[in-house]
Amino acid sequence: MTMIQYEAAATNAGGVTAILVAGLVLVGALVWAVRFGMKTRRREPGPPGRGEHPTLPESGPVHETRQMREPDEVPRAGDESERLRPHDLHASGSKPSEDQTRRRWAPGSSGSFGGGPGRT
Image 1 (cartoon, rainbow, N blue to C red):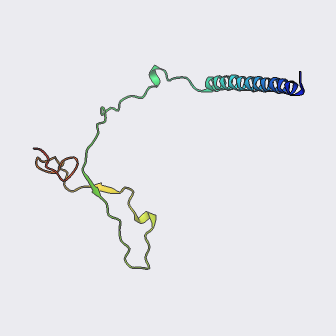
Image 2 (image 1 turned 30 degrees about the vertical axis):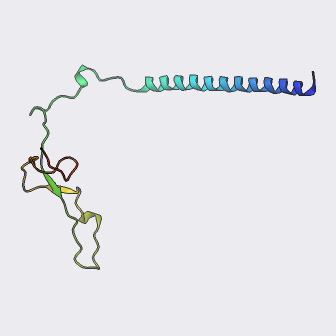
Image 3 (image 1 turned 30 degrees about the horizontal axis):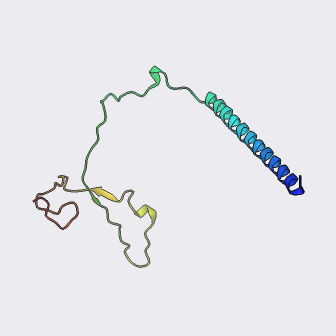
């Protein structure tokens, strides 16, 4: 065998050993992660018992409410020297509308892509 063949054989054995060691490290890390997860899961409280589940309020189930809303305008400062502060702004960007009737689609109005007849 020539010198090149000896070097190739040594490199190949070193590569196989490195892959084997890396595989063993990976398997060890996975085993540790599973054991750590099982240990953490054992420390967590179990599922609630029959008497521990939430119950309905005495008034009965809560239903959703619908309301029409309109944009809440940002207040303007009185003069140039006055600045708006966070507490001057409202919590929400909208407020309940005076007119609570629900808008409906009207035949003949714009279609879904705009500009065209609604229904032909």
